[in-house]
Image (cartoon, rainbow, N blue to C red):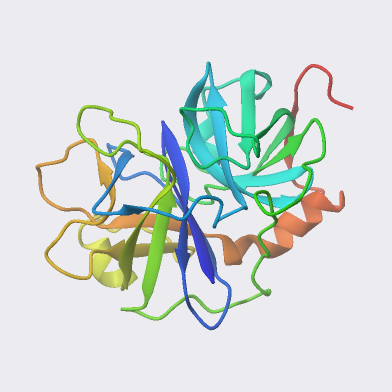
Length: 261
């Protein structure tokens, strides 16, 4: 399975697909707007994506991520640009976020490590790691997602992927009944750059609907021209991710919260 993550300043969520090699992507925001809703999708089988994580602030879903290790989550750096990680909670084992589930686990965040070359203005290197204040209990509803191999090739243009997340499902900020996903197709970065004014970087991935029906993450200016969705290619950051987890990275920004070890 191929996985990705898509985000907005109120929702970051993963992408899933079926490709020969595991390739991960983290969805980033569009210029001047954010991916606020997942549209044209369907509710997945509960807990069929056990690595999915919801990061909440003040009791509301804010961004998504995936569980890499029992104490580590991969998410998007822009989600925490104006937030105190100490106020965030990581929700594991959830299908619906509106009701309590026996499979749910909630952990705090003790540290956030942003990529040292993350750029807020261009969204380049939009990736971070969250260190949790406890270890997730792994099981059928909570599991790990493996990283791709180093230098793994991205999926080819036209390949099918699935975006998944807990973003709103209507213009009225209607929450989804559960984890949602929608099928999209990979779009060439050169073609996509014409819509993004040449601002995309090689470590990004672009997707579009496979037909005339809108699918994927819809920006706040829905009803306007359709803009391709853009994702951070996690496979480009595998070496950095493992360096941080193993504690050998010498170029990292670590923000510790109260109670950090």
